[in-house]
Image 1: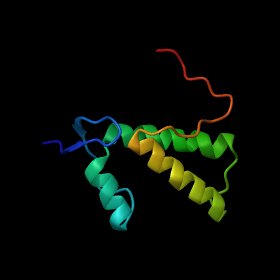
Image 2: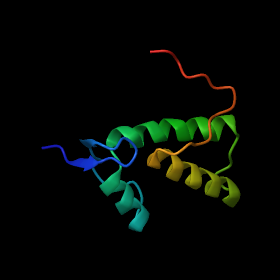
Image 3: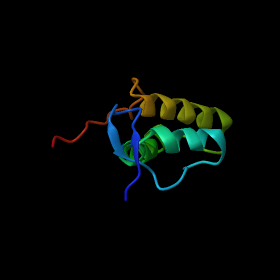
Image 4: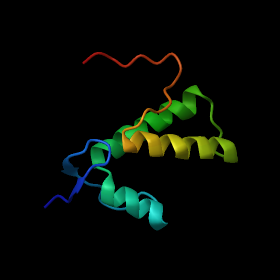
Amino acid sequence: MTRTVHCRKYKEELPGLDRPPYPGPKGEDIYNNVSRQAWDEWQKHQTMLINERRLNMMNAEDRKFLQAEMEKFLSGEEYAQAEGYVQPKE
């Protein structure tokens, strides 16, 4: 049976993650309140941000930026986009 959560981003019941993506309270919060769909979308968006903005994960400021953007993305708020990126038409 698939575990469902009330997704913070999509505001509906959706399949949840299999396990917390991070240790500690932040991971538990994501596990309990973010759907697998939203998390997968964040992972793709995160990769775009890292690549397009040339973020260095060894740099504390870049990690803080990415963490803040993750919070915005997963909460359904306006978040940073990769510059010049145009979402493909479906």
